[in-house]
Length: 89
Image (cartoon, rainbow, N blue to C red):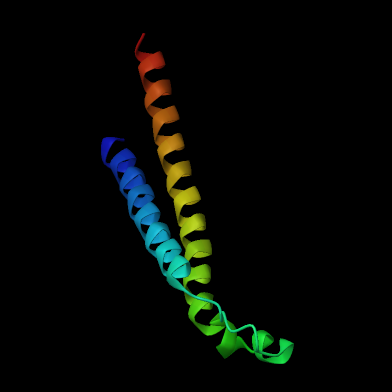
């Protein structure tokens, strides 16, 4: 059970790191600051940097699912170890 617990924890750590990287990529994006731009220009994906935001947003969502799955592995491993210890008493 120890290796299973370690894999779950490692998955959570890696997922957290990737989510942090994606959040940093999103934070670095800049929206147009030119007030003379028309509303149509601001809604254009290229003008708003939407193309550069899609990948990190999708990556964050994927990593959220991976983190949740890894946390479930940790939870199940911990519960199993607890049950085994209770059975030994």
